Amino acid sequence: MRKLTDKCKSLLQKPAFAHLATLMEDGSPQVSPVWIDVDGDTILVNSAQGRFKDKNMRHDARVAISATDPENPYSAVMIRGRVVKITTEGGDAHIDRMAKKYLGKDAYPFRQPGEVRVVYRIEAEKISSM
Image (tube, rainbow, N blue to C red; front, top):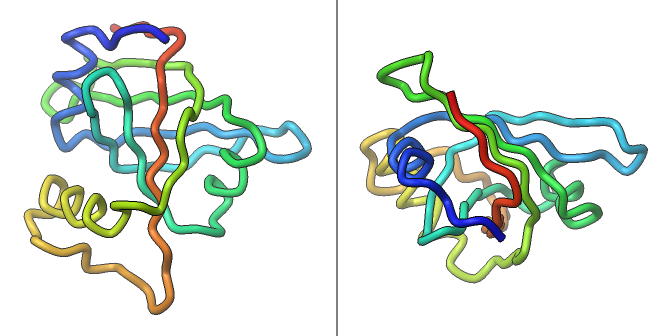
């Protein structure tokens, strides 16, 4: 695991949209825009159980993330890493925190009936920035 740089943490703590690349079972890449969070040197992503990215990260822990600073599109971080933990514990509370960060709302407004929220903890292996 590599420690996240200060620049990386600073950017990921902003309401910056990130792009998460995962691998399909056939090895082809799949990319999704995601809200992103940081907990120490761990990157957190939240999704719903059963989505492509959920299935992909359970099948293959390797991921890549890119995020661009919303205040300066010429400032970005690119991260390659691995999912080290997948849990539903705290998933609902986490997506509510992300809704506050990205939408200014206390609760996630797009929750679907029966949806199970999942938190993925990602450790960086390679970090680059521009």
